[in-house]
Length: 472
Image (cartoon, rainbow, N blue to C red; front, side):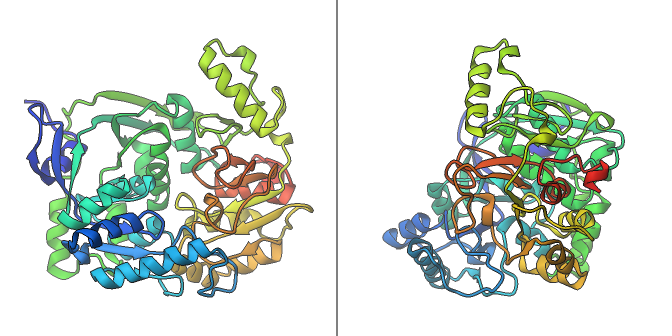
């Protein structure tokens, strides 16, 4: 009998019962969820209309993050009436159903996928489903996280279970040392470029190899967060000492004897040596360079010192059409050096890259320098806790002295769902996860990259290799 993958171990341990003869359709127990004001209203309305309670209110956390303003002075005021009603209804529902809520004035408010780990609510071996596709972030801890729709949120809240289709396991092995100036963001962008935006559709990814073992928790969260951008509906990294060290001091992680028993149980959370994966992908860390997107899909990316590609060199007609449309939208000409592309906006933030490690790396580039004339640059910490830590380390002063705006936590300019948006035609260097048409504002143009590269672009006024003299 062959060994079992980490993904299958987690699914098997949470299966309530099989719903199909082949075992691929099943009823899955879900340990925990996090709710936001944007994807939860219809689910709560459904519960109210059916007079159903939430089965385990203590297994849910609510946090306002998508629609709230991030201006430097925080208030409860919402300029948009729709956003105001969403946050009001969210508060009403959390109070009615007994769910803890971090509203905009709460000292722990922040982006859901930043807040959950820093509290210690993401534990190895758990299953977490939430109404946001980037719930895959939690795979950094050896937890199976995935996004669900509104009807599934209602089903989860009422039953603590979901109807789930088992995925195929896929392993991405990365070995060797990343070069100086190359980050986890570059690694995952290189993977997405390699296999395509649909290369992991139907799969749950497991990241393995010596490179992954050397990554910090923040770096691991970044790659698991963006795994969804190549089609994966789950991403995992086997928990190790790095995970234990991170969790040990978290306020809501197990303590005392519970911690000891939990650590003992987590030791088995890894794929067996003889486990078989549906697909294997290998990457050499030494070959990865700082990456930036040039198009309107995360897989339309290239090393920073490359040229804008020529669709005429693409033999596949579908891909050629996609490239032509992307370049038209982005206002780019084939053959242009990526480092010659000028920007008007720079954004450091999002559930991908707004943790303390990300802010430190950007501040290291910005220290003692100034944002270029004509560029508006913003730093939005991922949570109130990250913001306080950054201020304790003096990072806020570094950014402010360099001409960056230092703002309050929230999803902010990751998506055009608040007042932090691009104007039509504006080009933005962004540490976010998606560069779709209109993602950051109608007719706005987004280039994805690491936080350090965003800082370098802001200072130079154009896309910049963070390893060059101009970038450091």
